[in-house]
Length: 514
Image (cartoon, one colour):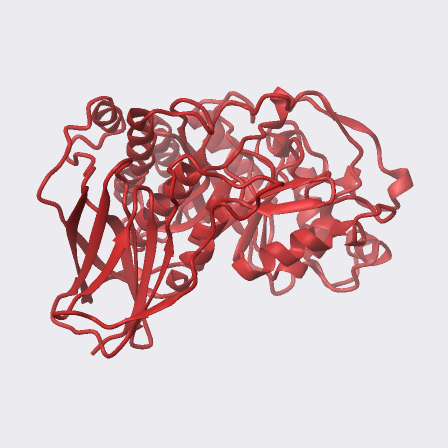
């Protein structure tokens, strides 16, 4: 069955600039992400530079990853940065108590991570240890990384091979401090944030952006109590020290990573769209204390979280990645674009072999997941001006179980539009980029992209992720089961661009407008 789905884009109705950081990523010391995924050591038979895999760098560079968060996650509040500097043979052997008691030999530390970021062209975002560390420890890490003058810490960095400062601007003051980062209440954390922030200083020309731990999911009480406590206890002065507020939202799972019914397909996609309500709700509370929106709202962990793949350690969070996950990524990115005036950074969890990864790596093999291809497809949005995108759906599903999840996530005012294309649009230098997802598990749609008070100028480029099976995924033996089709040049008909989208299909339409 095929139906026509009209969407209307208003290029002159601007929302805000899409911060490239909303296409950010996250790399935690967890499972097979860092060790084996990014880092194999200098003596590995796998091609590498100082231990960092060439194939991984080559695969990730085309994504132009704008920002990469490290070293955690839960690992961050148990990580002591001095363990990961200096000669490899002198670094201590620890255990990763959060993730399966795995051995942590600290062979991948500050310098190795910075080399990886520079190879990718990514800005670093460090998560500091508040849970088991001290303000002095975090203060020293900032000085070690950022000071260009004469001090013992700066000179130690130089002796370890980095003559110039790393200039790390973004520093998380703890991670998930309502849970694995210390099981704190919001007011207790507000006090700890202020104490740590007092010692996390600017060095040389690098102005530190201190990012606070935000709410989990729809925990509005955390956000309200954190901001209210900082405001009332200091007449608003301590609020100025908050350089960002980072929430976490996982849409979870429905079924398993590769086995799910059509109803479970709908359930997970509806839960992924619920991130919009969580972000809206959080920002509305923040606006009461920060009406000028000087404190950026960040979502530095998001994505699907399926049961660990059979045969893999439960503490490693390894999962396969299907067309359904590609739709989760596309729907989430579209939400970030449509909230360009609200969300300033987002980091999908996680980069390689863990949760909703963009790469899967096994020994010498490296493959791209369907989620990778969505990030590639959506690249033109980065840094562009988001504009209004409207889907004109004639028929909405009642959602069943999916609608119940939406209501639970405070989206009761929006039914999940099963027969509606979901998407976003942006403009840069006279070029309009439109992305859209067909969320229906069985029906093909003909997408009809119309413009309001504008028109397409000549041919338009279309690119599709068009799977023939909504349960398709890539394997090491068949790495290209799901991939982007070659770009096509199409001529608008009747002022609209037409693109056919199969179930679970994702499309990009891009062209000049007048």
